[in-house]
Image (cartoon, rainbow, N blue to C red; front, side):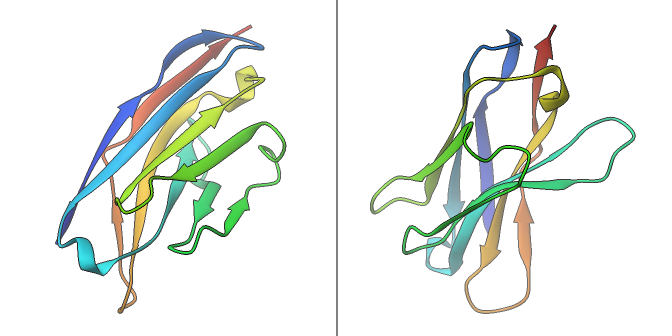
Length: 117
């Protein structure tokens, strides 16, 4: 089993920046890709960013060029730097871990990011 703890989030004005972080604990040897999804009220959960064990990244189209995901060397922990935030970025951001060996994902409880106009 893997447990995820999320940090950061909060309220920021449009154009501002935030950082959210996520740390995985438990069976660390099964942690594969890590990343973030988000869900705004009334909308489906969508990809924000993913980073693989080898450091390759993939971003959702709406955040490319504004958000940056990074992974701590030797640790199952990631950061997401959110820059140039806009009101449409308001959502609950969920940390996600892909099981390295089987088709299973783990999810954090989510952290709220609110961007005021």
